[in-house]
Length: 270
Image 1 (cartoon, rainbow, N blue to C red):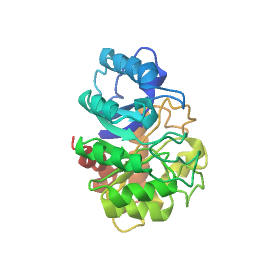
Image 2: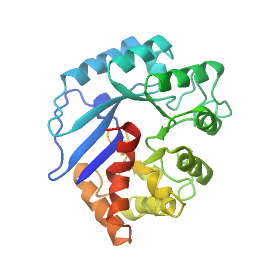
Image 3: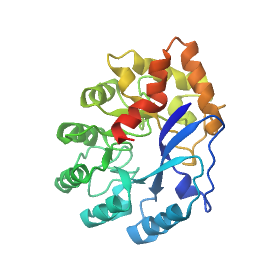
């Protein structure tokens, strides 16, 4: 089967990368360069870019993102350098606010700043997908209003199913549908609302009830991001189980394949 995972922190968590895909899985994965609020281009981006270039991805089709514009020093010049390095997406904030926007956990009432709007426009000019995961709600709607291209929320679930600050409201999900974007279901128990796969599948089924929802759901595992995965989805071998669970719930194979691969492939044009 084909799987597209739009967010994993393996690059930032593992010293030596030797990545193998689970049997019978054709995997495309976006590996994030992440650093806490104190991270800088020199201290975090450049060392992890070096690790990326030395990594052995074997059966995995690997792409690169940056989680938090602060890792690029919130700099347009650094953003251009990252695009030249092959970065395909930038998460505008992590849990810390920065000069681009407030986040879900810091300066929540702040949306995109004037500079943040310039940063987003430059992302689109460079064909770098804007990622609104971790963003404040106001920042999310600012992105939706100004983006000319589909944007992503690479790893978040439904707040209607599990009211966590990192999850998306129904209105936010409708906005993603309307703008042609997608949200990546993340395997973290805290975002799922429980430890069992049933808790995770509820988020997908809820979003599938929306008109056009089947076109706006992807996978964003957040593997190696300090999460506690739902049981059975601790590694890539669980993808087939998730696919089978969707089929058992009456989801068509066509829709299940969109969720597992097709929707992200459209947005990231792989």
